[in-house]
Amino acid sequence: MQSIDPKLQSAVWSRVQGAPCPEETAKGGAVSAEEVLQWMQDERDGCAVLQYLAGKACGKEAAQLRQMAARRACHYRKLHTMYYLLTGQCVHLTAAQPDCTACLSEALRTAYQEERQRKQRYEQAADRWPAMADEFYRMAADDDCNSRRIRAMLCNRLS
Image (cartoon, rainbow, N blue to C red; front, side):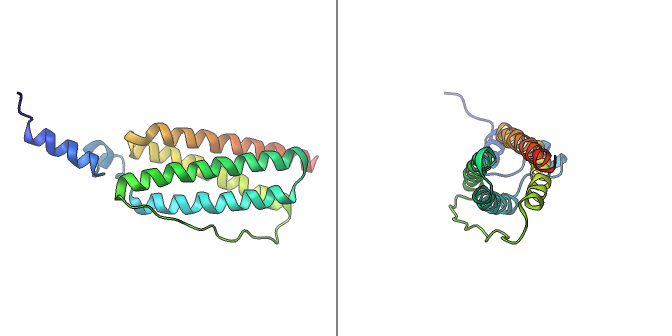
């Protein structure tokens, strides 16, 4: 039976427990549990906003907004899994009440900007947590798709 190098074993256990590896530290530090928790709240709130907007919209726009809300809910679950991997804790976050005063076009404009910011945030997170890079890149691609859909909705509304 081969013995395992203690330094290698320590490095493996550090990574399993969520400690940053040297490559992650060089890229600005590993993704923290607090960041993931904040992103979870953002996804939960965004899902509530999109569901509210789907109720204000009609037809094809409403269906697309419901699909985007479902993607947000999926992102929340992925982030919750990441949070559990980092901390070993399960949390339940409630969504903030969406702003009901904004007109639909203005709310879509805000949602578009938030989707673009999320895409950028997840791409940066992929560099900081290589073990979860594939999930972060998928979420970034979803947010890019959502932003393009919202842009098309605005284009149709303003034409």
